[in-house]
Length: 346
Image 1 (cartoon, rainbow, N blue to C red):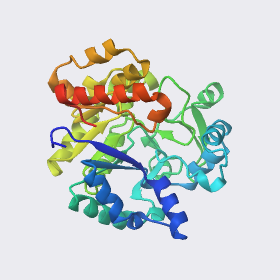
Image 2: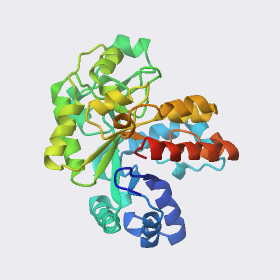
Image 3: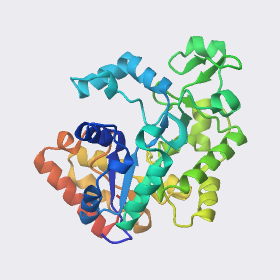
Image 4: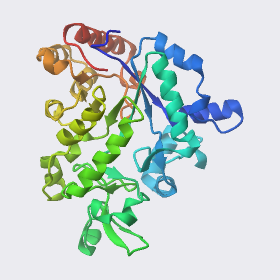
């Protein structure tokens, strides 16, 4: 694999450690990930390993995941023998950008990064710019960092607002959300119309950049000024160009990958991202028509060089379920051809 066209392997960290816990007969941490497994990833030719969901998540987020009927139905469909301990809560309902103690804490992450780097592998972690978990300390200390609502909002849009209990007085706060869907009930929406919020999140990003080699930015387009204003009716300043520049002044080689939808890949590249998800190619591959896929590769190389292409994605069905074997092989071949003629990032 050449450095210009890196490949990335995603690992659901908590699932892996649960499996290791069962094998070891004791709680497993990042230190228990076998060197042999890391050797195998390096030998397979990967350049980046994305360890999904290492950050601290609180008990309140887990409680919401366990008690929300719709979520529980989805879990039971996926895992028919579901147990309470299987529901760890969403890794995107972050309560603090420190490594969860159950995973070994920041020290274990530092040791894992060293082991990866020694094998020529780079470490990618999550950055979730749009929202925080419902028990993040800022809810008490800096409630102005979040989108607040009124009693009327709570009554009219209960799918998007909740009454949050606080030591310093209860407040109506908005759930984090995508404008096309109801809010995520285990999150609270950050308010990018407040410059202090953007400054605080830039500090978080700078802190993360000291502990990994790159970040995958969850739903990165949601905090673009026009998207944010259309969703919340509040004007926001551009976050990404300033935040990315701030990190690069400190860590020049740091990598930014944007999860992005709605055909906004080019927009995110112009914001400073090294790579943006190529969801459109994935959708065209699933539709199974060769011509749109072939024409997808007609775009200019400077654009395609910075697309992250995938057949596997934790937000989609497994590739084996999405494609029959012939279409799976064809889709993989198109990815390879696209990489040779119009390089990609994943």
